[in-house]
Length: 465
Ligand code: GLU
Image 1 (spheres, rainbow, N blue to C red):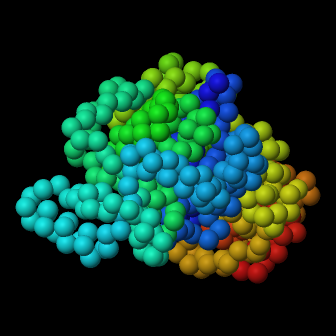
Image 2: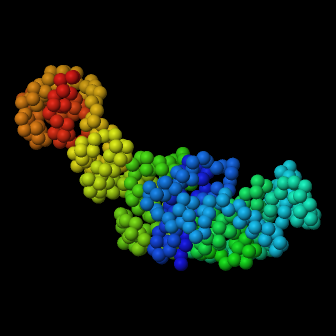
Image 3: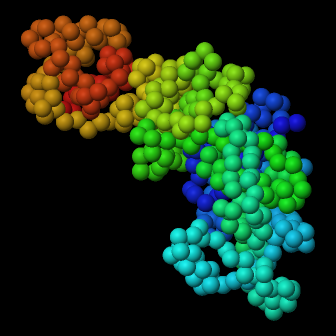
């Protein structure tokens, strides 16, 4: 039975887009193998904890349709799924490691640690704990009883080559002599990431640890912990880290990094997931657009490329536009209606959808194009078309007033005739009309827009100029 997990830390406003990508791959792998996908909240860094982040993270996963089988809000066989609710479990296991001689109590104060670190750096050595407490403190319980603050450290074995196999990257090796005696339990009683992640992945029967490349240096520490406990390791796969098109690490300065930002911009979850699926993986038939089902079918973890794929927002916009065009009109209407929090009348949106479907790339492009349907625009004709010559709007008004069959083609025909009669260049004529009606130089097709807006409103707008 395949069991995968995503283990977000609620230390930011929401999930990072890279984490959504990792979740997608974990979800897909589990679903492909009829396994389970779980969410575990890793909230052991109490200093960086962000209020409300957990709820936002879960709701973002839901919005993207990445359903999970177990999690902090769902419960499950291996509950609890929030690390801060599992402290007893970590303490019990830390004690077990101390008893087996794989871990030890350390009472060193920050000042001492800073000092040895400084000294080691000046001697050009890799800074690491000097095992003072391991070698000198024979009965730690005495100090604990006195109320001394302590941490528990892993006793990293010397002269070992730690080797693990990564599904995407092959064999990876580390020398244990380069690994410091890791803290497992911090002085605030919380476990470190390394300790908690190993215990939870094991106890929650996670079979595949699929996570970002940045965790590779942590993996040998985890392997040592599995060994110390006498547990089998999971299968590891480290995904490439997403990059900006200039190859730098995806960062706030170049691309928005929180997944919810993309929803707020009106990117469609399906398009986002399709786009992310192409990060580090390509469809065997080189297809660009495919749904999650197809991804699930074709995806193989082994086919992933380890090099950092470029997260190109321009391509994402293009892909989102493609998804919008493939969305049935009534569905698109509902998406737009809900995107703008049901503020604009649904029936009017219905009429405008065919006009803008080919033009918008994301839902937030809708209002700038269509606001004039819902609100009277501010019109400024200076420098536009025939400019401030106000006789033309008046003539247009009078001509339109005569139309009885208020249809786009009739409107278009009458306006062409009027432009000719008045000897005004078509470009200038229609720009004047466009701005008069919509307030903008760019709008959906004008005749159709006028038909939808209705005769009365069009005349009213022209007469107000
Ligand atoms: N809590 C870690 C994170 O924030 C999880 C890393 C892992 O998957 O092991 O990404």
